[in-house]
Image (tube, rainbow, N blue to C red; front, side):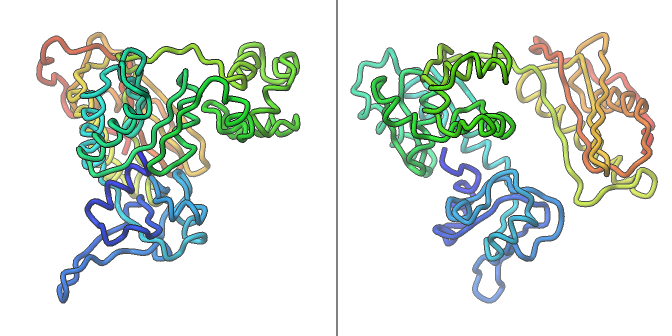
Length: 371
């Protein structure tokens, strides 16, 4: 989906189409004028805090504002950009709509998150471009949103192609076009080559996929290890044997939040306790919605010096109730020396099992937390 979160927001605020819009930050707010009934928006230069960009429109991206960037840094690049609060309930709703629209035409789907899927079109006897445009039309009819599609012999190349003509793009890649259309691209366009790997490649004077394809396998293995080195050589030549996986079990679910300011264990005890409980309740809701119980509960803390500590506990039986999760997470919390202010707090459920029946009501009493 194209700039998915931002595009969903523009359905509610069509007057912002064509403008630089950023989604994220707890302080963002939209009000309505009493005099003319028009929406009034916050601009990025009025934001204070340590929030990050959840997503941005293509107009904001043209100014250098991308997902994951700090909002304060973004404000320096695009001070007049409109800042909207995130609405994840709406994003999940439109995610379900677009996936159902695709499934009505091509049911062999691998879910890759809220805004992206892989589709196996091998068994559909229809001309490729016609089929792709039918899928795009179905998505637009169901959501009012555009998507970009890449079609190729495998997932690796399709992922790359889906980004080549955004927004509302359609790229069809034949096997004999890899050298012409893929090799000139930057090596970091390959899904799986992150910033660190890209830096290591640059140190070897490898910047494009063509240069990666020409690099001796021995060179790549010596710098990246046998497995990764061999993988880099394969993907540079467009080789990817991974099938479209239509069903999978999640390994874990988590909820976490980064605070607008570092919280003191004693002075902010009430707020920390409230947030901790809400995270456990939301994690419980996630488990119930997806139909899982958890036997391993963990916590994550990031302190003011950016040190990250995790702890977990394995239970004798699956749990799903928020009070049970809070009890187990509280036991983990007691094992952490709380000597600094807290920047981030998170709760995680692992060792997941499908729920065959509704678990018994919580047997735990309220646990006394360190904060």
